Image (cartoon, rainbow, N blue to C red; front, side, top):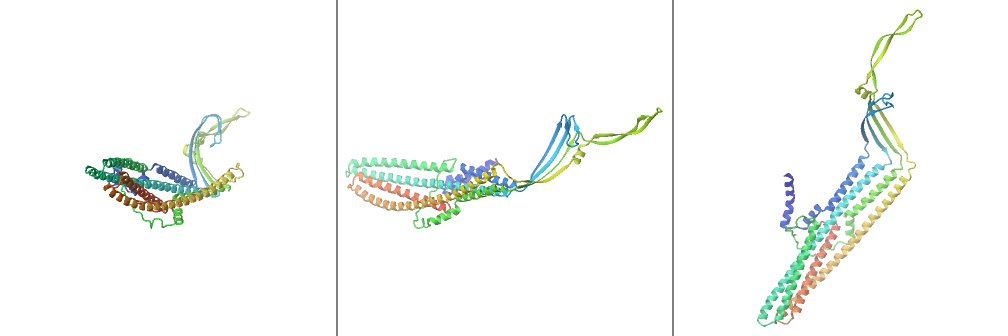
Length: 468
């Protein structure tokens, strides 16, 4: 019941979204919370975090405890009594040991730093994936907004054709126009309705694409809050390319990740070089045990014994003493058999089949490769920013040109409609003028949303929040 309540409370915000519409931030947030690839990268980051913790724990002393319960059969020398036995002997052994690495050329320290940088790199990779998902959702969101406006334009074209058809029917009935005008407009209405069906289908496809990117479970009553987007040509591209690039180098996760990989590779190289150094270990142990052969003196039986006979036939009597032994108790042996040891071990590597040398050479290559990868990431980032900036300028110019084209097309259609109503223009020319308006409107909104998305890409590279 408690889990069900939590699920319900968690779903309340998203139920509200479905009712009121989703804005861009809500779509991005939902996608980030439900993307499977992102969850996998989060697990990878957790593994790297655990590896870092493990490398830190490796510098701590190792402590081991053990016990053994053994039955020996046949000939053996008991380790506790140092006596020979050829019967079954029970022995028990309890021990503890520790080992502490005092020095190994800072190899462990550098390994810790390398794992830390790997963990930080995985965090930045996680952020990069979040950025990629955010941009993909933003692109799908803008495409859906574009498809929605295209549906409205198509609906407007249908309404214009239907209004003109009704007007033409009245003129035909009055004898002012030929019947062919009415048939031509009927065909145009059917064509416009076909375009409207296509526009609605494109809207549904764009909506489905956004839903899939969000990994949304339910598509019932899904709708977005379409913002009223205006183009501000003055502030759009005020920042130059170099400034955008400098900001991106400082903020982009993939650049940070590549830099951390360089640092990690350098620490791995230092760790490999540390293996050339002698290693010093401090070790110690303590143990005790029990043996079934261990005996202790329980007492002495005294008496007399005949040790000889005199010449006269008399017996020679002497006192006698016979020791009596019993099994030594477990508690006594556990206390008396304690043995301790402590020592320092020095290992000097002389030759190990070139393993250390090869490891160092491979670490050098990895460090160089990481540096090249970092440089390549920066080059690709610069190229991407230049391309995005150029595309944004081109989209703005296209938007400006299409604005002029739409204004001219509307004026042309205005005069064409007046001529057509007066019977001075053919239906073909009228429909052509109307189609030019439709094409100009479509091109304008396409250029508008194309420019908006490319501008958002540039803003994103500067570390700005993704909003509309």
